[in-house]
Length: 237
Ligand SMILES: NC(=O)c1ccc[n+]([C@@H]2O[C@H](COP(=O)([O-])OP(=O)(O)OC[C@H]3O[C@@H](n4cnc5c(N)ncnc54)[C@H](OP(=O)(O)O)[C@@H]3O)[C@@H](O)[C@H]2O)c1
View: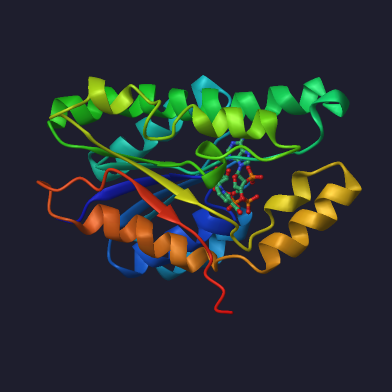
């Protein structure tokens, strides 16, 4: 029987690409985002493999409902792809506390809530895999991104204690892409930085490439754990 995979932030960008790749590969997928209407057509293509569940990852009750609905529909949960996330950028002296709150709520608390909700099932099954969409910003800090980088450092491989606690029980794979061409810049309220990120990400990786890495990490035999994936655009000069 194929694995069941929960993908948060599946409505666009990397999460959407991961959904397409994993459904095509035959996995059963619970696809979550605050709005799931953009996923309807994809779900209709794979009706037996797909669950659409609106969920805001910053609300623990909604995340618990997502996991319960997944277990009810598919009988368990094998993989959690913690992908939902956002970035806003400003010099720290111009920072906007409400935007910091959103990043912390989604990028840190949302990831923890989802882990909290799936772990009882994974531990009971004695099998599970947690994939966290970290970032190159979780390895190297750049100007204007202090708070985003802090949220991404929370789950970068070296600083996360999660893998140590789950050693021998649940596989944990952080995936850290550099620039990826997605609607990610649309959350940036600073117009100059939004334009800068649009241009930079426009030259970035295709989200399908990140989806491929997610697929690969899942597809390795259960006795293998990809413990670190860093993907960067490569421009031949
Ligand atoms: N793009 C890049 O260059 C890049 C590089 C490194 C890492 N990353 C990371 O990769 C992940 C995906 O980014 P992306 O580029 O694909 O961004 P994106 O295109 O903006 O997509 C973000 C996804 O997250 C969902 N989301 C946002 N807030 C949410 C919430 N509170 N609850 C549930 N879902 C929520 C969005 O759906 P709704 O709005 O419908 O909820 C959307 O599906 C993020 O964690 C990001 O930090 C991105």
